Length: 116
Image 1: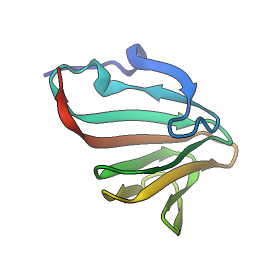
Image 2: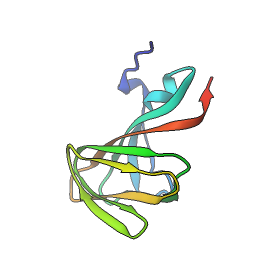
Image 3: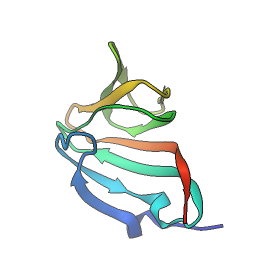
Image 4: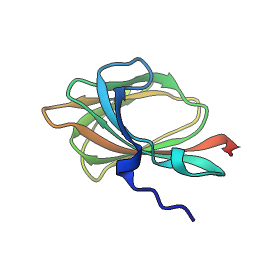
């Protein structure tokens, strides 16, 4: 068992997959040895987005707070607190913050190899 305090793994950084604005990232699973999945929290600041990228594994994005628009291929959906978006292997997807409040997400996906 590993317990991670999110304050110890918090950092501000450009968003992944295109550096479309800024985000606050809590790289929770980075502090876990011998893991085989990622578990992260990320706040997309106003105007920020995780850019379009093709998935090599399934991913789940859970909305903690804020509003956004998720997309996969030519499909788009408005998302808000309490909603989860399940993206499938092979899809090209992304998500964009909307409104004045940051879009806070929990993101989880399997790793191709166990991290030592």
